[in-house]
Amino acid sequence: MTKAEFLQELERELAGVSAQEREEALKFYREFFEEAGEEREEEVLRELGSPHRIANLIRVNLGTQDEESSFENEQPQYTEQSEPQAAEPRTESDSHPPLPPLPAAYAKKPHGNSIGWVILIIVTFPIWSGIVFGLFGAVMGIVGGVIGLAFGSAAFAINAIITLLKGIPELIHHPFTGFFNTGVSVIRAALGIGITALCVWGATIFIPFCIKSAKKLFAWFSEKVGL
Image (tube, rainbow, N blue to C red; front, side, top):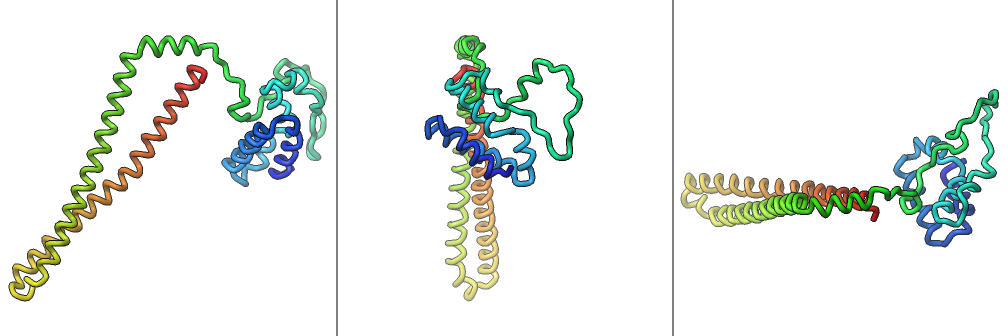
């Protein structure tokens, strides 16, 4: 079975769920295959198992199918290279194979500690709020400083370029002074442009890092309180 065949079969198996739920599930597994890459396609197919089982698990988590019936009609599969071995005593874990990756919307998440986390967050609000707002202020200060430095260095470079252009006629009347002033202006312009470029480069790394960190923190918070 290939990735395309797996997705087609899964779409057929999910014919009984709503169009939105079906499309979200298909999108999840398309992205799952894309993240794994073509070289790991066979490994991912083995990990996921049959589309029928995936569809059953999704229906169970949507509440449209009983959990006991989700493993019905699951027959052991043998490849051409392997042969059935002698029967061994089955354990409880053998009757329920490891669950394949499921979309977050269908995964069963334990919320037993949600109330405890909410209480802890409320009680410790003066502590963590001070830390959060302090970090936010520090980040905004750094961003503001970088932006100010970028504008300042850009203005410095522009002023140096203007001085350089104005000093060109001086090269004819006062060659020594003109060459000296021209050299100083070139150095100033290069320094201003370099600092501006460095600030822009730093901002393109620092700002996305802060946004990604904030998203991870919010995701962790949402998981703990059961949002």
